[in-house]
Structures are given as C-alpha cells and as structure tokens.
Image 1: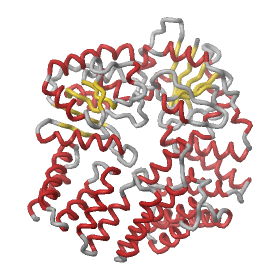
Image 2 (image 1 turned 180 degrees about the horizontal axis):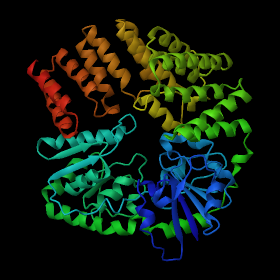
Image 3 (image 1 turned 90 degrees about the vertical axis):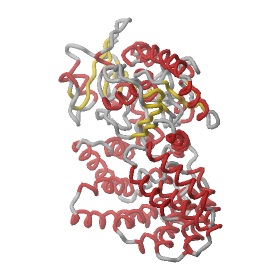
Image 4 (image 1 turned 60 degrees about the vertical axis):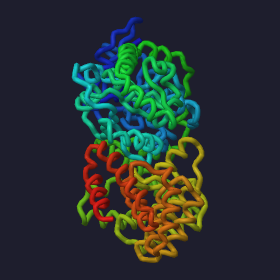
Length: 574
C-alpha cells in the first residue's frame, strides 16, 4: 500500500514518524506538505488531484491521509481526490465550525475516543482506532541529565479552555513551598525535551481525556507520567502504577508526595513507561493505521451534494484560519463569491465579518477604521435580515468594544438580550481566552449549545460596563442575571464582588467571590479581588494565607514573577 501523508503526521511538527517508518507488511509512506520535507513540496492552492498526479507517474498512492485538517488546511478539492482519503482530526472541540461542513469531503475520518462517541457531522462518522498522537523520536528521548525538578508541566495555559486542568495545576503548584515545581508554556521542542529529562514527574490532564502528545513525550523522556484516572485512552496502553500513575482530585497530592518520597518506586514506574515508548512511536504504528483506514466503510464524500453556496462557505471556513497568505486570499475570494450569490443570506454576512475581524490586527490605524465601519455595516445588514439571532447583536457589540465605543457596545448587548435564537452561534465572535466563547464552542461540538450561554455572556459584559461607569446597582443586577443563565463561569462573580466592595459590603463580596472559585484557575486577578474581599470582611488571616498560597503557585509558573511581587507587596501593606 502506497500512502501520501499530508500535514503534521501524528500531530508532530517534524516528520520523524515518516522518515523512521519501516513497514513490516510492505507499505510505503511519503510525506508532503506546503514547504514540505526533502523537496516533497505542495503549493498552497494545489488540489488533491494535482498532488496525486505529480506523484503518479512513478509512485501512484493508494491512500491520502490529511492530518489535523482543522489546523493545517489540506489541499483544495479533497472531495475529488482520485484515491481513498482519510482525515485525522485532533482539536475538534475547538475547531468544530471548521470541521462541520468540511469533514464530509473525505472517505474516512479518525479522531480520539471521545470524539468518536459524541461528534455528529453531516455525512460522515469519525471513528477511533488508536491514539492519534506520538512523540518526536529524534527530540523526545533520554538525555542522561540529572532529574533536579520534582514536577513539571509545559503546555497550553489558556484556562478558559482548560478549567479542570487548571484547577489540578493549582493543587500541584501549592507543593512549590517544599518541592521544585515548574509550570511553563510555549517551550520550544528541544527545551521541552530537556525539561522533561530533568523532571521526576510529568503532570498531565487531557482536554478530551485523550492520550495526548504529553503522554507520549513524557514517557519517551523517562519522566513518570501522571494522568487523570478517567482518561479514556491511556489505560489501554499504560497500566496504573506500572507504566504511569492515574490520579483523581482526592488522590493527586498524596500520590505526588508518595512517589517523590519513594524515588526508587518513582524511577521504576518511569522506566517501565519509557520502555513502552518505542512501540508507541508513530513510526511503529503506521502499518496498523493504514490497514484500519482501508478496512473502514467509506462515506461516499457527500460534500458535493451540498449547495454551491454552502460549499463556498465551507471552503472559506477551511482556509480562513491558515497562516499562508494564498490560503487567506482564497478564503476571501470564496466568501465574496458567496456574498455575491446570496447577499440576503445572513450567514454569508456573518462569515465575512468573522474573517475581517481576524485580519484587523494586520492593518494600519486608518485601514482598521475603514474596515471597522465595513464590519459594522455588514453586521447591521445581517441584523436587519435576522433580528432574532443573538449572535448578530453580540458580534456588533464585539466590534464596538474593539473600536472603543462602549455606549454602542452596551446598546447592542441589550438588544442581544431581547433575542433567543442561536442558529448562527458558530459564527459568534470572541476572544480565545474568553470563558464564554470557549464554553460555547465546546458545547457546539458536543451538541449541547444553548442560547443562554450567549445571553450570559451579554449580561456579564454589561455588568462590567456598568461597573466601569460607577453604576454598582445595575452592575450587580446584570451579574446576577448572567450567573442565573450560566452559573459555571467565574467572570460575573468577580464583577459582582467588585461592585459589592465598591458599596462597602465586604461580607457579601466575599461570599459571592467564593462561589466563583470552582470555575476559575490560575487567575491572579480573581485572587486579588478575593484577597481584597477577605480583608474588607475582616478575615485578615485568610487573606494572608491566600496571598502566601498565591505566591507559591505563581512562583512555579515561569514568567509570573510579577504576580509573586504583587502579592508580596499586598502582604506588606495590610
């Protein structure tokens, strides 16, 4: 079987999983990508057929696999590829709108175990076969260094997305008063491998309870992997207390202390985990992957059955997030074609607005002003066509916020609260670190999205605006409404606490601030509000304890020294 691999194989940045592959069953794999390895380069606007034909005279593939199409846009017109195709989907909980109308271009889709259970896409059902990640074998390997770090975590620290992991990391970081704990983000691959080689324990928590990249990287570097006990994939590959350690909220700290107090046992389990790494490396799992894909029933590629307008929008979704300028231009072209064909279709107007917001940061101030006016015009057209859609008004408010017009923002937020439809919810604008945006996008993927989440977002923002204007009564009212609609987001609890502090109600401020604690993690600003509420309510020892805990936690977080200094100063000035 000849296989063309497009994009990052097994979600890794290099091509170790291809160059190190030697089939035991006669298969061959060739990697190709835009600016690909060893001269295997595709051009940004190549179609799948272009690429297959380029290989075909000497080496005609039987299968083309596109890895992470939600983040690494595939060749154009995958639905017309002349050989069997497969998509390997990774971050579906974040990129669901990109995938919804595009995944049915493929014959087969694979994803993690949870995704195979909950995802419902038109025309195609993603399957789970085995973990879709791996280590970079040339990078993640034993380096023979001393393990002078007790516990390490390096990864995404956006705790609007990773709330549960953030809560667990807070617990881990409290050990920094007597253990060496390192929490980091954005660490380059070789530095990350060096960090894992220096660590006795690698903390991990899967966003989708999957066997994620960190599982493979940790054991390959010889660190003892700690993973959540409700992980859906790891137990099939790594045994508890034999090759990894599984924890829950109650056992996490006792288990960490036990293994650090028993270095021989820690080293034993870590060594057994490391012994499993070669068999789990991507280059040694290709044969099974290829044969599983070829055995699965095909979808029939129903993408072509969609309307032309929907296909245009799907193209735009697929390529708008690409960093390549030719992809960006192609996405704009497709959106313009869709708008020209159906200017009365609100989704076209909303999609173009989403695209143009993403390009604002690349422009001069004069260009931003001009484009902001165009954005508002498009969204106002959408509002006239679909006034019942909450996302339209939220998007108008979002643009006004970034233009610095808080009066117009508040007006549009109030109009959003007069609506109750989220048919266009997948086109809601929002910051990556906004908890409402993250929560709503994840709910879209799970099929549990509710208009109330968007209403809570509007009310929470109105609470902030009213507080900034000095109207604490209105701020409290909006914060309480937000909490009623979506009680598991911490933002309105903080706003309400600040409003109550401004009114001199320390006890009430402390009570409501404490209610929001379960829904936020590693947030120094929330902790400042809580600290002030404790002091105002007369709970001075609790405030000092919170400050000391915060200093321990953020001393472990690389780059957060300013938080430690802030809380030291707060302790000095009670």
